[in-house]
Image (cartoon, rainbow, N blue to C red):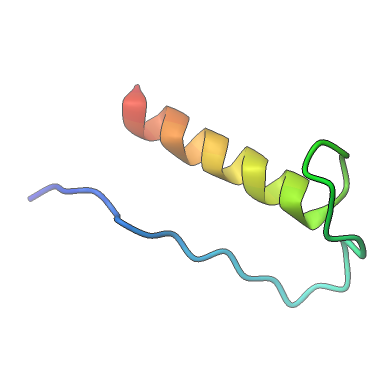
Length: 46
């Protein structure tokens, strides 16, 4: 088998992080998403 995902869905029902952005600020949702995407891409590329 094999293959790769075309899309990733990130969801959360937790009350934290309370702030959505900016993506450069730790403890914001966009920062966490950026880090998750970076790690997923890194795992796929390695």
